Length: 197
Ligand code: ADP
Ligand code: NI
Image (cartoon, rainbow, N blue to C red):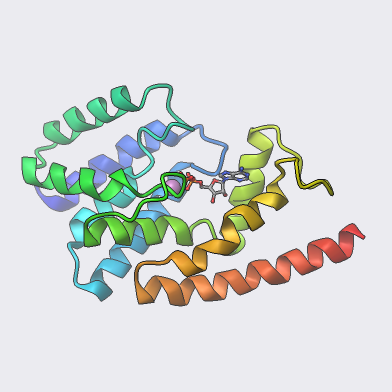
């Protein structure tokens, strides 16, 4: 099967899986990550097909989103076999998405994994990152903000995670984008607290 047709089928698969997500992990997140991963792969001379596919699939099986990680991954594997991805391609994709999550705190083993991790982290930053964070907070029933360190709020998530991401990028290209988006979040937070007071 042609690579373009495989990609079309994978996009449809992702549309179906994440169609109703309102936690900031919707199908548009997957497509932005895939497109950013492909761009970084071109700069880094990595495998663009693996990066794009892994970008689309990187949140499949995520514990926050799926009742069973192993079931979701098993289902994904048989789908990829159905659309004729080779054993080697599937292995590379699995390696690329295995350690992407921030929560796992791991550095992916392969260049493609590092690239997808960067692309996912970039999507947590800037204007889109801000929108996703409040969407996630709302979906999980968390407050926007309260002046109490002990409470998990969406504003607290900026300090716990989002503002640390620019220093954890694997590639120079991602780092450059992250710096600009980080600056935008700093400006946003200044304005937020000005209005809060
Ligand atoms: P992880 O890297 O831990 O798997 P994700 O990358 O799936 O987490 O999380 C993506 C996005 O979900 C974050 O960038 C953020 O927008 C949102 N998010 C995750 N945890 C929280 C939280 N506690 N409060 C607000 N938003 C969150
Ligand atoms: Ni993601």
